[in-house]
Length: 297
Image 1 (cartoon, rainbow, N blue to C red):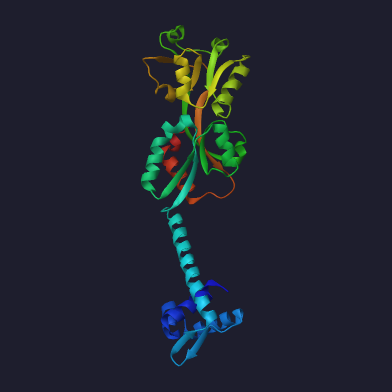
Image 2 (tube, helix red, strand yellow):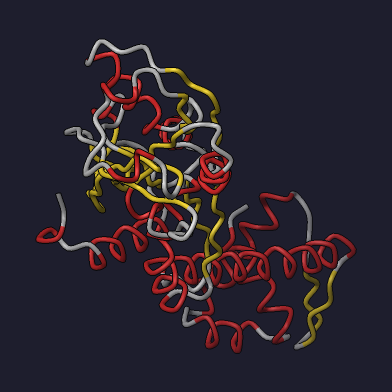
C-alpha cells in the first residue's frame, strides 16, 4: 500500500463521487477506479459498496478510511515541517562554545537569532578539546575552539579571531611594574590556568615544556572569573586572553602581555564528512559574513 492509494481512496469517500475525486486530484476517473481496485486487491477485501450513486463503506473500508485520514494528515504535517526546516523557519542548532568565548560570540548569535527566530540554539559550554571531540562524534553541529585543532584533517575550519595572552597580576605588585612577562619569569610562580580540557591549557603546557620549564600549577578551573578572584586573593598569577582581561576590575588587578609567540587563536569547526543540517549551514554563512576573509587570521 502506498500513500497515493490512500489519498485516492480517502478523497473518493470524502466526495462520495469518483468524478469529483478525480477532478480534485487532477487525474482521470479511470485512474481513480483502477487505483481503488488495486488497493482492494492488495488488502484482499472490499472497501466500498456502490449502490447506484451512493457509496457505502464496509467495516474494513471504514477502518482504512479512519486510519488513512490520520496517515495523510501526518504526512502533510511532516511535509510542512520539512519545508519549514528547508526554509529555516524551524530547526535546531547544536553549538559548542567554551565558557571564555561567550563574549565574542554574543554578537553573531544575536544576528542569527534575529534572522532565524524559529531555530532553537542548544549551546554546550565546555573546553575546546571537549567540543572538538563532540563535533567529531556528531554530538554537536559546529563549535568554537582554540587553534590548533587536533586531528584537523577531520574538520573544516573558519578562522574567527586572534588575541594576545596576558599575565594577570595583583594591582600594585612588582609584576604590575613590568612591561611584559616571559615564561621564564613564571618558572617558580604559582600559576592559575584553565582545566585540561581547554585547548589553551594544553598549548600553555607545551609552551612551558618548549622553554624547559616545569610550571607550578596552583589552581585549574574552567571559569575565568574564579581564576581572576584567585589572583586577587594572591594565590598565584593567571594567564588569560586579552579580551578576558579587559573585563576584569582594573582597580584591583593588572595584566601584562605574555612575552611569547603563543596567541589565543579561535576558529569555528565542523566535520568534513557527514550530514550538516540546514540550521548549521545557515549559522556558518552567518559567521562568514560576521568574520569575512579579510578580517581572518
